[in-house]
Length: 194
Image 1 (cartoon, rainbow, N blue to C red):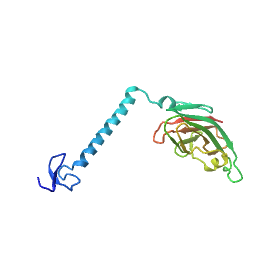
Image 2 (cartoon, rainbow, N blue to C red):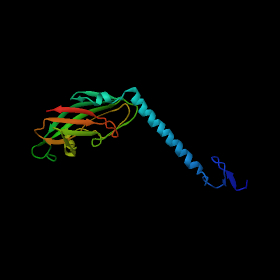
Image 3 (cartoon, rainbow, N blue to C red):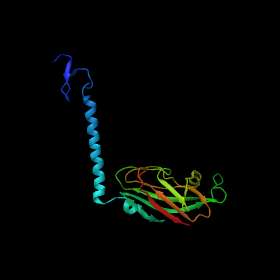
Image 4 (cartoon, rainbow, N blue to C red):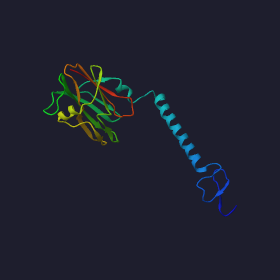
């Protein structure tokens, strides 16, 4: 073997000492990628098999039910309580349009898990008034005089606050869906009948 050569550890070909990878087999880049892909595939198959085989879904029991004011629901150490709903005609600076009111559902979230929990009034909460989707109202939240449900709840800590909506004054039902994980389709559903 020449002085400026070394042997590829994968295909045993002679290559330059300065080569970062073997020009014949591509050495270092091909095998780690394949290995990582194989490991990821086994992990995904394992997780799917675990949930399918056990017949258990940690969210199934609680996400298929509807909860009312005063109810608390616990999932994986996180407890969500629907504290109540208040209505407001607004303030001097923030008022709903004529015929509407501000509705302020209040929640308390206790993070009994070992991880931080990120909450966002925009990402984690969806609301429906009499079956119609309604958007978050920053004006409603401004008149609440309470904290918003935005931020990170550290492990073992709590958060209490409101989300706000502007709705017709004669509404009958308010339904709020709360997701503890923005990447999951599983949501807790809370209903309030006026």
